[in-house]
Structures are given as C-alpha cells and as structure tokens.
Image (cartoon, rainbow, N blue to C red; front, side, top):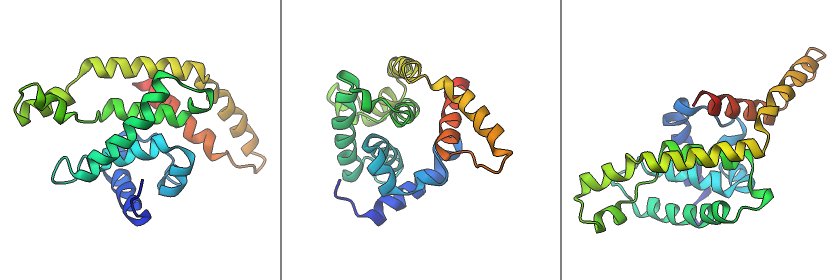
Length: 183
C-alpha cells in the first residue's frame, strides 16, 4: 500500500478513537503503531484501514475502494487456501472486525438495480455473511487453541507476584478470547 505512514497513522488513530472502544480486542499500545501492525499482519492492517476509511466522506472514497481491493486480495487466499502461518490471532481479529463492520459492496448491489440507499442496506444488513464469518472464527479459534490463553494468563499472573510482568501478547490474546466468547 502506497499511503504515507502519517496518513496510515491518522486513520489508525481514528479507528482507536471511534471504533476500538466498541470492540476492545486490539492492544492499546502495540497496535497503535501503523507500521508495526503492517509488518506483523497485512490483513489486520488493511482491515483496520478499510473500517476507518469507511467512515470518511464522501463514501466510498477512492482510497477506501483501493484499500478494499488490497484487503480482498489478502483475505481470499487465507480463506480459500489457508497456510498454517496465516492462521493467527490477528486473522481472528481481522475476521471479527469484518463480521462487525462488513465492507459495503455498493457496486455489486447497484448493479442488481438497487438505488444507493437500498444497495447500502442490503450490503450492511447481511446476516448470512455474519454467520459465515462466525463459523470461520469459531473453527479457527478452535484450531489455534485460543482457549488455552486462560491457562497462560493464570500462570503469567501467578508469576507476576514475583515482579515478572505479564507479556503483552497474552493480555491481547486473552482480550480477544473473552471478546469472542461474549459474542
């Protein structure tokens, strides 16, 4: 993606201010660094940017459409032909964010003869898409043994009495596990 790092950081900041308080499954420290997220997970990076730009005006902006193109190019192979190294907790975070803030497929709905309002409604109110993504989430969380993070956290918490801090990735994964469990 050929966006400036400052522009990416601005959209990431917007995401953390407006969207993250409603989902709270990302790290408040590590995931605020746009290039750090990009280097760790291009899928999560583009998902967050797609969601952040979906609230920009006018909608859809050319930037939002471009980011969705990148996002689809990254996501499709990970769903259709996943590799073990691609199935990570960041894949789960991305998939859950997409389930909640499904990308709007205006062009496809408009080509079906819907006006813009109906095209937006049909794209966003899509229970079938949500159920399909929920199935992917559940199976992937099971495959990753995400529930084991509870034991990892308990051990880390017990060790923290000796002055050892709890690793950030355990807290981030516990937050994800509890978020997915509640949903």
